[in-house]
Every structure is written in structure tokens, then in C-alpha cells.
Length: 384
Ligand SMILES: *Cc1c(COP(=O)(O)O)cnc(C)c1O
Image 1: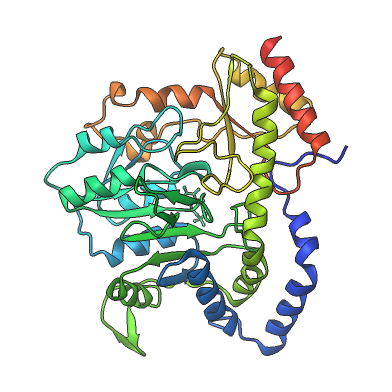
Image 2: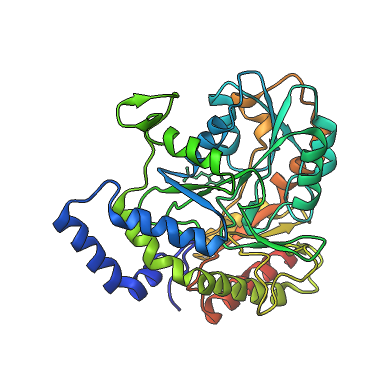
């Protein structure tokens, strides 16, 4: 059996090697490292793929979130509501801009932000909601957009984990993750579903004026060379990274399908196991059918409900099976984000999830032998 990896980037590289190597050689020869033609071309190709008017490439997914918030003109003291159960980058940029992060609980089955909890947290100071499409599945965007409209709030989608996922609205309309709110962000970190070979990120919006503002902010607040109209940052997608992403974007749907295929096999193997809860897909479908793209499984995350999660992590390590606990500590209990307004009873779901979740190896190169070994090892241990 091939050695099992949490993420396998080499398999994809072997498949696109010639194109990537040729593009990179060309960039090295022409020295067009910054704002080379691949950056513009990738921007256009991603706009077409997502069906969004504007893609603004930038340096990484954390910058993308920060720049999105800067572009919306949020001011110190404005409250921004986001999920307690996410990667720290989401809340970090809120705090960095001296906005006030307001963390709320998530749903027990999808791990995504709980709309009722958002509603309870809204005050006169609330200016924005940041739903995170966690592990590859969209948050409840019907309800979030409705709530935002009612209270006149911005919606900033943190789409670092769900690029390529499609949300089906109640009226049957479909839209790509990251393009439904006022602005969306993503990350091209190597292990993300569309990963480059270093850091990279992008911001999405359908708003022409906001797009213009954002394009200036990523470039030192310049709209005309050496005229700095607003405070900006330096955050660019390297030409080399754009070239890698151009080779991968046409394959993104195939990559997503391979992940779903692995998820389907995992789900089938764990069926009927009472202490193992498989990830639930909402959005009106099982999420693992052949054609569906409502879940792109950035992570395949189980809940182990009989108290054996930590022991399972240790056991899998012994068996040579990598795994992850995303996330082991709720953000509201992280030193940097403590706030008197939080009470432990506000976060029953997150407090439970941090004890139960475990993410299994998930990438496009998993084979049946590996999946069978992983699932039988997990089942034997959890029932043992
Ligand atoms: C990875 C990630 C980010 C940050 O992306 P970087 O490119 O690493 O800066 C932000 N939010 C979420 C939910 C992520 O998973």
C-alpha cells in the first residue's frame, strides 16, 4: 500500500508537470515575476469559472479577508459577527483592523455558523457577518443574506475551504461559493482545494465600485501611479503562482469529484456505526452523489461520540494514518480573542465539537486500498 498522506500534492503535480514546468521556465526567462500576463489571465479564467464579475488576486487568504473588510470601509468599533469554530485567520483580521469580533456558535451537523445565534448577537454596532464555508460546504446563505438585508449588514464570505462548491438557493437558483455576499475571499495555500506552490489568495465581488476600491487597496492605495488615495497594503499574487493556478483551474471540477468520491466511500464504510457520525450535507441533497457539487470536502470530518476521539488520534498515528483535529480549541477561549461578553453557555455546540471531531486523510489521490485500511482501522478501534 502507498504511504497514506493527509494531503498529497505530488500526484496532481505529476499530471500537470509539463504545463507547469514550461510556464515557470518562461517566467524565469522573461523575469515577469510581478503582475505578469498569467496573473491577468488567471483572474479572467477564475471570473468565468465562478460566474462573478470581479476577481482581485492577492497574496494569501488572510490578506484577502482583511482587504475585503478594508474595502467595505468598516471602522474601529464596528462589530463583525463570525463563527467560533473556524481557523483563526477569520477573526484575526477583524481584530487587526480594530473592528470588534463577535463570535457565535455553529450548527452541530454542518459545523457552519448558526443563523439563530447570529440573530441573537446583532446590536446597533453590528456592520457585517462573515460566514465561513467550513470544510467545503456553504453556510446557510439563504437565511444569512435575508438577515443581512433586514439589518443592513455586509456579508463577507470566507471561502478559503469551499472554492468550487455550489449553493442551491430555496428558489432553485445556484451560485458558486464566495460570490453570494457583497464580497468573498479565498486562499490558494498549497493544501487548499485549489492550491498553488506557495501563498496566494483572491477576493471576489459583483460590485464594480467595490472592485475598483479593492484593486487600489492591494496596491498601496494607488489608483494612479504614485497617487495614494487610501491606505492600502502590498498584497499580490506572484506570476509563478498564477501560472500554477492556471494549470490547475481547468481540473478543479475533477479534483472536487475525486474528493467527493473518497467521501462517498468513507460514508459507505461508516454506515451503521453508532459512535461514528459522518459529515452531513444539507442543501437538499446527499452531497455525495455523482454529479453534485454542493460539498467539495476540503476536510472529511467525523464526530466520534463515545469519548474515544483523543485515543483514536493516537491509535491512527501508531498505524501510520495521519489525521487532524480541526479545530481543538474554540476561538472564544483563545487568549487573543477573550471577551467579557462571551459565556460558555453561548457555545454548547463548538464546545462539544472540539472534543469529538477528527478529520481523515482527504485529497484527490486516495485509492481504495488506503480508504479500506483507514476505515477498518477507525471502526475496529472505536468499537474495540
Ligand atoms: C486557510 C484559511 C484562511 C487563510 O488562508 P491563508 O492563505 O493561509 O492566509 C482563512 N480562513 C479559513 C477558513 C482558512 O481555512
